[in-house]
Structures are given as structure tokens and as C-alpha cells.
Length: 117
Image (cartoon, rainbow, N blue to C red; front, side, top):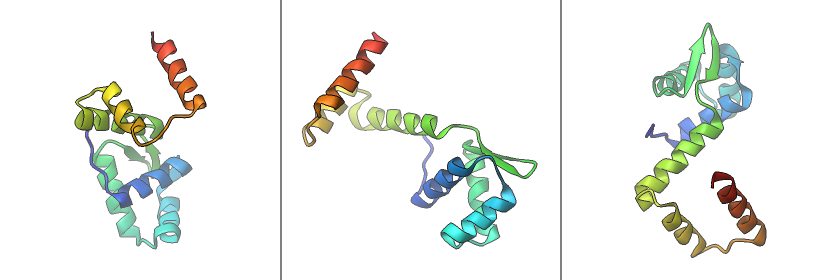
């Protein structure tokens, strides 16, 4: 996917995910309340995110083409690939060098590993 998103686009995407499906007119009102955006700003940002394949605006109803969970999963995979050459063990080693895992965290990681064996 490798889609770049700015902070404003991410806040806007979160707003859509929280309220979808949402009529585009209602989205304009929500953005005016939350971000103090004009109608044109909302439609400009929406158009960009639709072009990136994240959302769609069909017959005046905005909905996602990719779920929030799938989006963040892909972003996580891209991060591990770019920063750690795709090595999950290298990522975990770096992550745990500054943050200790709780017994619960370790149990959850073991459970994930057991499920994919």
C-alpha cells in the first residue's frame, strides 16, 4: 500500500471510521465542528483519501474501502519492513530494549505464535 498520510488526514480518516457510513453533508457539518473546516476543505481532503483508495463517496455516502484495522496492520507491516528489513525478531528486540514486557504481554505474544504454528 505504502500510502503517506499527514496528521490532518489521519484525524479526518479516524473521524470517518468512527461515523461511517456517513452522508457527505453530515461529514461536512462534523468537520466544521471538530476541525473548523469549510465545506471545500472537507471535500478536498476527502477527495485525496478517496484517490488513495481508503474511502469512497458513492451517491453522497462516505464509507471506507479498507477497515481501520486493516489500514493500521498494513502500516505496521510497512514500518517493520522499512525500519527492520522485515525482521519481526529485530523489531521485538528493539522494542523490548527500552520497554519491558509484562507477563500478560509475553503470554499474549506466545498465544499469537502458537496460533500461527
